Image 1 (cartoon, one colour):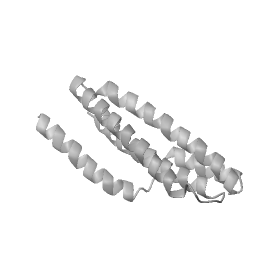
Image 2 (image 1 turned 30 degrees about the horizontal axis):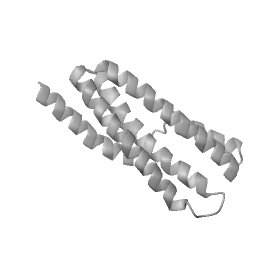
Image 3 (image 1 turned 90 degrees about the vertical axis):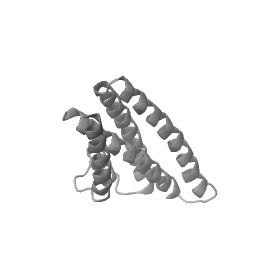
Image 4 (image 1 turned 180 degrees about the horizontal axis):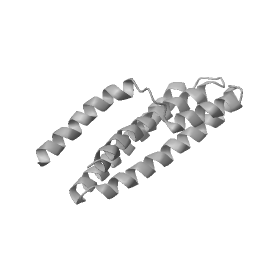
Length: 140
């Protein structure tokens, strides 16, 4: 039975990669960010404020989903999740350094927004993966 669960999880991951690339339903955090853009007339400064807020919301959502998921797992699964999350945090930190290095010496008001968008993508992708796991374990 455990092999079946493992196979189901990996199948879910493969399917979710396809779903993420063809995401139809807009996430509630993205909707809030789009609404914020509209309220701020799509100016660079206004967008920056919205993107900073969105990054904070994605980070908060990451913690919420992680906590909910952890509660549904057995001890071994919890340890695997913890290890995975610790490795992902290292990846995130290094990815953020790389993203920032690309625009370090560039001038212009659009570059901070480009950095924020890239950072949001990194965190959002992790949230979406954890939400898929959460949905899977909640359905069991």
